[in-house]
Every structure is written in C-alpha cells, then in structure tokens.
Image 1 (cartoon, protein in one colour):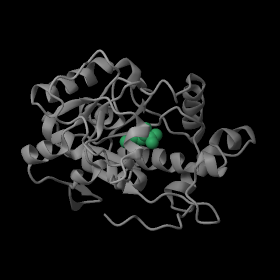
Image 2 (cartoon, helix red, strand yellow):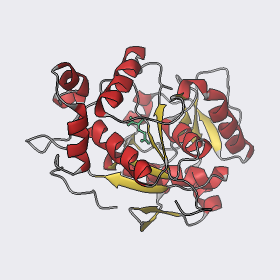
Image 3 (cartoon, rainbow, N blue to C red):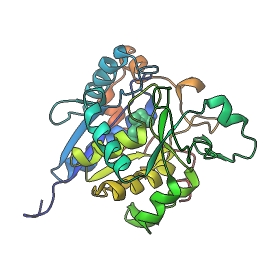
Amino acid sequence: MIPGQVRVVTRFAPSPTGRLHLGHAMSAVLAHDLARRQGGRFLVRIEDIDPTRCREEHVATILADLDWLGLAWDGAVVRQSSRLALYAAALDRLKAQGLVYPCFCTRAEIAASASAPHGNEGPVYPGTCRALSDPDLARPHCWRLDMARAVAIAGLLSWTDHGIAIAADPAMHGDVVLARKDAPSSYHLAVTVDDAGQGVTDIVRGTDLFAATHVHRLLQALLGLPTPRYHHHPLLTDGRGERLAKRTGAPTLATMRAAGEDGRALAAALARGEHRPKTALRAP
Ligand code: GLU
C-alpha cells in the first residue's frame, strides 16, 4: 500500500434467508481476494433485518461455509439487526429534509394499480400516499422516498463500476421503500448506511444488484456519505443457463462441505474464473 492511500475495505454481506450456493461463494472469494491483494480488510456483514425471512440457523452455516472456503474475515461479524438505531437516524435525516413520506398501501393495492409499470423490484409505486395531508401514523405504514424531490435535490450522479463511469438513474425505481411495515429499514437504506459506516471502499457483488446501485448512489448523496467503487460480477448459471438460486435447485456449499469436497480448491477455482458464468455482465 502506498503511504497515505486509503486502505481497501471490501465486504461479503449475505442475508441469512437460506444456504449459500456457488454464486455466493464467487462473490465472497472475489471480495476477499480484492482486499487481500492490496493489503486491505475483508469484512463479513450479516444482513438480517427481515425477521420474516431470516433464520438464525443459516448464520452459523454461512460462517462455516466461509471458513471451509478458506476465507478469513477481519474484525467481528457485524449484524444489521444490532444497528437498527443507525438506520432510524438516517431515516430521520431524510424526514427532516422532507424527502420521505408514510405509505399505507397494501401490496395488493399497489399490484392492482393497473397503470403501474413493473420495475426491477415489482411494480413501481404509483404515488397514492405521496400527498396525504394528515397521515394517521398509528396505522401500519412504511416510509417511501419521494424520488422526484430527491433526484431534483441530488442532481446528476454517477459511480464507477470496474473503473467505468455509470450515470445514476434512480428515478426508474420510483418511490422506493426505505423503512418497511414489518422491518425497521429496507435493504437499500441499511446497505448504504453500513457500507459507509464500515468504511467499505470497494463493493463486490453480483450483477443482480446492479440496478439497486442507482438507489444506493442517490441515498449516499442525500445522506452526505462517500461513494465506494463498485465491481458487479456476472452471475453463475447452471447447465441450462439458469441463474443459480435455491429455488432452481443449485447445490449448496453446505452440501458440498458435508460431502467432503475441498473448499479451498473450490475458492481457488472460482478466483481463476474456472466456474465461468454463461451470461455476460448485464449492460448498464
Ligand atoms: N444481502 C444481499 C444479498 O444477500 C447482498 C447485499 C449486497 O451485497 O449489497 O443478496
């Protein structure tokens, strides 16, 4: 490392909603190796803010998988469930700027709104609750970002992906949820707050999260947080070209580990690109 240069910090941030598969292993290996090549730090963060989908048993399995792959992390494993006050504070900042509003709509109501185009994360919210004059906060509600106002305030934004400048276009996501009815933060808010709070300089993750980066870049601007470098990597696919996922029956790392496979050899193969994905990086 050159003296005075900020040390590279990467992270692997799984959600304990299921067991890890090869795609997760690739993200973890690439993030780990990027940090280690430059004498940096590799962090592990468990993204467990969704009580309806996260299971404690998966946390131990994830850590055992990383150990099996030979990926040692720096410092303590951070759990998002222990950082809820930080997300609430970030939401309060956005409330103070008049950039979020409470929304009382149910999923069914939003889905039924015929004109709503479908974005990456389901229907784009039609804005029903955006201008409520006297919202009853005793009723169950989430908090949504007023995207048009936020974009107007933030102005033109960009980030770098593999060193290439990408123009941020968060407006396509519409008024995204930042705090949910059933969870005190959304993925977008928690990940943005944590990456900055943990000093992450380089984010390595799959292209499935490329679209979400438009929102994260906007939140960084609104909250006065630094923008890390991004390295979205192509997703691994199975023999039929299907993206690896639990629901498509991808073998889990835990199964390979139990079968006595060599995790370190697997990590080395992934680092060499030998489990080559069959899909190209999605065009930005
Ligand atoms: N927790 C997210 C997931 O498991 C990844 C978050 C990220 O890398 O930004 O899909």
